[in-house]
Image (cartoon, rainbow, N blue to C red; front, side, top):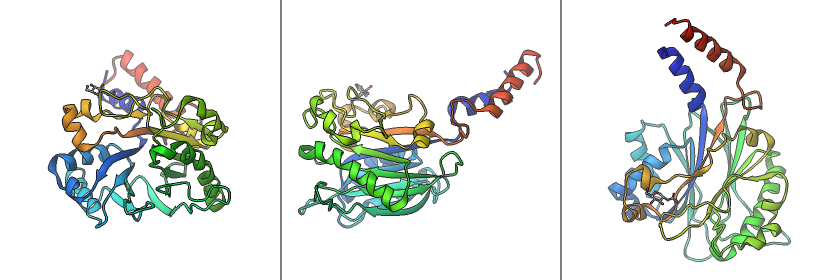
Length: 308
Ligand SMILES: *[C@@H]1O[C@H](CO)[C@@H](O)[C@H](O)[C@H]1NC(C)=O
C-alpha cells in the first residue's frame, strides 16, 4: 500500500478527529502529592490522552495542584496546550474536594459553568460534592456543544446522588436547553454501595434519555483484589450518543500501559480513569463517512492498479 493510502486508513480507523473525554478520581490529590515527580508524570500522561479530563478528589485548599500539572503539561505536550478550570473546595465539613477540568482550548472552548445549587424542594442537600457543570463549544457541526456533569459521589449515599443527577440534568435544560450531556466520574456505582436490585429505582438509570456506556460488570479499581465498576460515563442526547465511538468507553489501565507495579500505580490512585471517544467528524449521523469512503475506494483502486 502507498503511504497516502496508509495515512487515509489511519485517519479512518484511528479517528483522526476522535475527541476523548475522561474522568479520574486522583485519590486525595494535594500539593505535596502532585509535586512528586512520578505522580506528576503519570497524571500528565493520563490528562494528555484526553481533550477534556475532569479530575476528582483534588484536596488542595491552597490551589497548588493546577499550576503544577499545567507546568508538567506545558513541558511534555507543549506550552498552552491545556488550560484548567477548578471548582472551589466542595464538601459539608472541613474535608473538601475540588473538581478540576483540564481541556485543550484548541479543541474545546469553555463557554460557561456553575456549581449545582443543591436545593431541590424534595431533595435538599443530596450531594456531598455538588456537580461542577461546564459547557464546552466543540469544533463540530455534528455536535457544536457538550455539557459535562462530573460527580464524585459519597459512597454511603451513592444511590441517592446518582438518582439526583436527573435533577441536575433538568437544571441544565432550564438553564441552557442543552440535551447533549455527559455524566462522568466516580459514582461509587457498585460493590455494595449500589445493590443490583436498586438500579430500577434510579432515574438516571431507568429513564430513556440516559445511556450507560460502562456496564455493571466493569472494573475501574487498580487493586487486583477488587473488581468494582465505581467509575462511569453516562450519555444523554441523541447527537452525542450517535457520535460515541463503539467500544471506546472504558477504564484506562495505566498500570499495564505505563508498565507499573500495582504498588507504583497505587501511589497515583486506587482508581483508573474512565474515558469515551466521540467521532466529532461524523456529520452524517450514521457510522459511515461518504467522502472518506469514496477516497478509500479510490485509494484501494489505485493500490490494486499499482499506482503510487
Ligand atoms: C490492569 O493491568 C494489570 C497489569 O497488566 C492487570 O494485572 C490488571 O488485572 C488490570 N486491571 C484491570 C481492571 O483491567
